[in-house]
Every structure is written in structure tokens, then in C-alpha cells.
Image 1 (cartoon, rainbow, N blue to C red):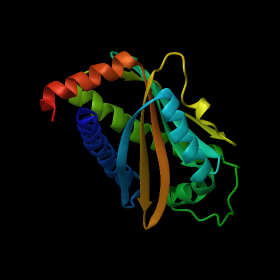
Image 2: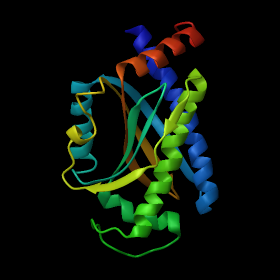
Image 3: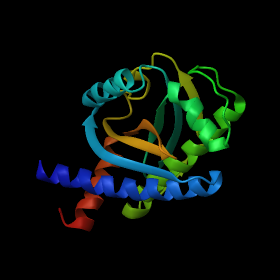
Length: 208
């Protein structure tokens, strides 16, 4: 158990480095201070991952989400999704674009909205997976991000039983000029890929 806790702590450190780099890049692009934080990282079975994600979807996102996803392969193989509560996304996008549409929460998004979230997802997800890949010296290749709006989203849409066996799940908080947006990042990874990462971490940190 101790080993698992320490592995999760190390992964949390690595992912926070990645999101810190992403925050710096996003801050430069939109000319506003963005603070990103990953308070916790969990290594979960598929079953437990579904329970945790459904809890987030029901309590934080109330079922409706905007999702940016990429797939990665080569020596590491999996998918990673950045999940936002849909009802907060118009305000978030407006802050990024220096606009104020004054709209109430809605599920209607423009092409510009989708492009904005795609770029945010691309920067954040590439920074996270890239930092992990660089640290453990295991190369990856990415697909371009896909963005979707899902009403009444369920964990089954993000956590599959077939090719992926373990889940890395973390919550992420976006802070833009005092506005907080809570999201989640779900990494579906093959058992072999996660074993490769954890074994490399054990060797690097001598089991700390």
C-alpha cells in the first residue's frame, strides 16, 4: 500500500509540472493569469474508475459535459480526456477570448467555442502526457484532439472494459481571474503501459 501511495504522489508531482507548463502557455496566449492545479491522482481499476467518474459527473458536472480527448500510442498506449462541466464553459471561453456574451447556461456552442476548447485541451493534455513520457523516457505519439458536448454523460463513455484495464484519474482546477472551473482528467491506459511507467518510477525513485 505504501508503494502505491508513493507512486501516486510522484505521478501527482509530474502531472502538476505538466499543468504548470500548460498554465504558462495558456496565460501567454490569452494574456491573462491562469492557475492550474491537480490536487490528487488516483490509480484505479476499471470498476472503481467508473464509480469515481460517475460521482464527478453527477455532483460537479450534473451530467452535461464538454470533453476534449486525444489518443496516444507508440510505446505507451491509451486515451486521455479533459472533462469540463458544460454549464460553466461559456463563462470560461469568454474569459479566454476577452468577451462577455452575458448568456445564461446553455448547451449551444459555436465553432469558435469548439476551437477554443480544442486548443486548451491540446495544450493541457499534451503537457501532461508529454511530461510523463519525458520523465520515464518512453516515447508517445498523439492524435489531434476531438471535442464533444455530451448531455447526461456516463462513465461508460470514458472508461472502457476491453482494451484498457487501469485508470489514472485526477481532478483539475482552472483559476482565471478568480473564476474557478473544476474539471477532471481521465487516462485510460493499457495495463502494460501503466506497468512500464510504474516500474520506471520505482527504479528512478528507488521505491520512495
